[in-house]
Amino acid sequence: MSFEDSMVVSAVAFEKTCSLEGSGESNGMELKEGRIKKRVTKEVKCELVNFDSLPDYFKDNEFILGYYRCEWPLRETILSIFSIHNETLNVWTHLIGFLIFLSLTIFTATMIPREMNVPSMQQSSSQVTEASLPMKQSGVIACLPSPLPVDELETSTPASSIWHLPELLVNCLPKRFSHARNITNPCILISVTDHMANIISQLLMKEVTRWPFFAFLCGAMFCLLTSSICHLIFCHSKRTAYIMLRLDYTGITALIVTSFYPLVYYSFLCEPFYCHLYMSFITAFGLATILVSLVPVFQTAEFRSVRAGLFFCMGVSGLVPIMHKLIAFHHRPEAILSTGYELLMGTFYGLGVVVYATRIPERCMPGKFDIVGHSHQLFHVLVIAGAYAHYLAGLVYLKWRDTEGC
Ligand SMILES: [Zn+2]
Image (cartoon, rainbow, N blue to C red; front, side, top):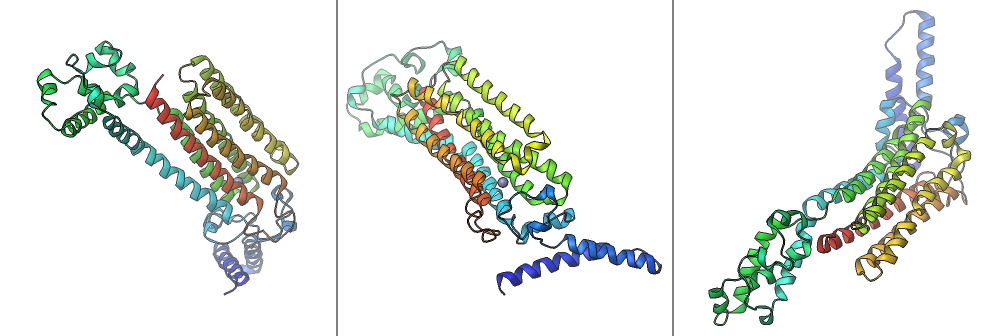
C-alpha cells in the first residue's frame, strides 16, 4: 500500500466513526435531511484538509500545504495520535522526549548518588599508602581534618571529608591494629577500612540538595508533555487552540526558567546574595512572559518573531550567571566542563529558535515537508538535545558540590 493510499484509508476510517455519531434521531423527511446534512458535516470535519481550507485562526504556517486536521470531534482528535497527519511527528517527538526525561529523573533519583559515591570511595582507598598510616587518636570524629562538634556533624560535614573516610579510618585505627599492619598484608587492611568507610559514609553523607536539579527535570517533563498534548488536540476547536497554545508557551517558559536553577544554585551555593538575585530575576522574567503570553494577540502568526525573540532573550539572559561563574571559578574544572555543556545547550536552543522563526526547510519547498522534516519537528528535536546537554551539566554540578560542599 502506498503512502497516499494509507492516508486515504486513515481518513475514511475517521469518516465512518464520525458518521455513526450522526445517526440515531428523527422521523420524517425534514429530520432525515437534517441527519444527512449532519452526517455530511461531520464527515467533512474528519477529513484532512489543505491550508487554504483552514479558518483564519488555525492558519500558522503557509509553507505546510496539506494534511491538516480541523475541528474534529475530541475523541477522533485524540485517536489521531495513531494516524498520519502534519502534527503526528510533532506529537511523538516530544512524547518520546518526555519519556526519556522521565527515565532520566528516575535514574537520577535512584542511581546517581551511588554511582557517584562508590567509585570515589574506592579511589580514595586506593590512594592510601603506608606513609599515610601514622599513629593518631582513635575515634572517627576526632580524626576528621577539622574536628567538629557532634551535633554539627550531620549538617556541616563536607562531602569531601566523607569521601576520604578510608584514609581517616586508617589513621584512626586503635594502636594494636596499627601495630598489626607491620605483619599484615596492607591490602587486607585497606579492604577492611574501605568496607567500614562505605558503611559509615551511608550514615554521615550529606549530599548537596537536589531540588534545583529535579526542578529542572520537572520543568523539562512539563514542557515536553504539554507540548505533545497541545500538538495533539489544539485543532479540536478555536477554544481548545486558545487554551493549548498558552499551555505550550507556559511549558516552554517553565523549561527555560528551571534550566537556570541548577546553574545558579550550585554555582553560587556559597554566595547566597547572587544565588537569590539570579533565581529571583529569572523567575520574575518567566512569570512576566507567561502573563504576556495570555494576551490573545501574542499567539497570532504576525507575532511569531516576537514570541521567538522573547524566549530567546530569556534564554540569553543565562549568559550573565554563566560568565559570572567562569570569572569566579575559572580555576575549577567543573566550572569549565559545565560551561561547555551549557554552550552546547545554548547552541541547540539557538538553532531551534532560528529554525522555528525562519521555517526552514519548508519555506524552500512548500508542501514537501508537510508530514516529515518541517521546521517545527526539527525545533522539537533540538529542544530535547539542548535539555539533555543541560542534564549533563547538572550532573557535573552535583558531583562538584557533593565533593566540595560549600
Ligand atoms: Zn511544538
